[in-house]
Image 1: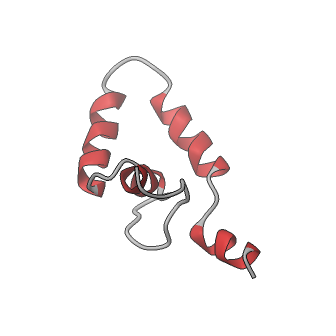
Image 2: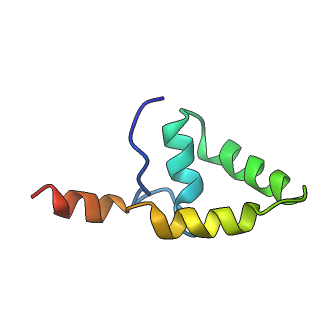
Length: 68
């Protein structure tokens, strides 16, 4: 597990949640997106969890601004 959990500014499609999780768990973004889509076929609150992570995870831009 390599980096902190922040939504990247590059390589994201919608909110950057899958890209952030892929970076965190050292896998490809494509793999994470496929896992998310497959998980949505199962019962559970996956979509709500995605929305919550989109709202709660900081963006790289905001983290970079705070480090000034």
